[in-house]
Image 1 (cartoon, rainbow, N blue to C red):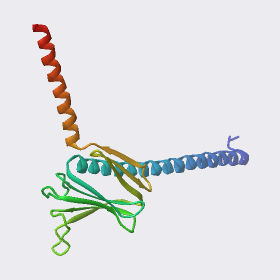
Image 2 (tube, one colour):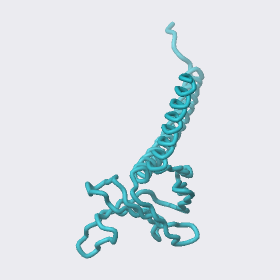
Image 3 (tube, one colour):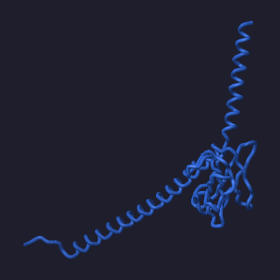
Image 4 (cartoon, rainbow, N blue to C red):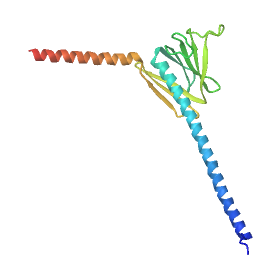
Length: 187
């Protein structure tokens, strides 16, 4: 007599196989969803970091900074900087949020943008901007940016002149301390 599987054994094995495949499919689907969320968050973070780096370089190399209140939630930030994306020498840069909620960076070789001769370049920086504010106190700038899809940006900026003044004061104090100390030892 030949040994073979019965019909009930075959049905039970097919049922177990179906259950295992169902659980595997759900695991793979969940893994794909988590990968998509991770990629989306990673792209948001890289966009935020690129914007932070550009803002920091523009402000830290700024020769002059001005702001104009355009609306209750948006300031227009104009500055002359030594940082250029388009190989311009000491360009005039303007950050402005337009009606489509896009933050644009406009770079021009002249203070007034030359629309006729097209001597300017602009870059869309980030979409879904809800607020752009610049606060200033004693040459110290605080930039606040709120946009959809990224964490709020608080960028605290000290101009290089402020840093060099603090270093000069520190150097002056250490020179005075050295001279006072050496005079005390001689006498």
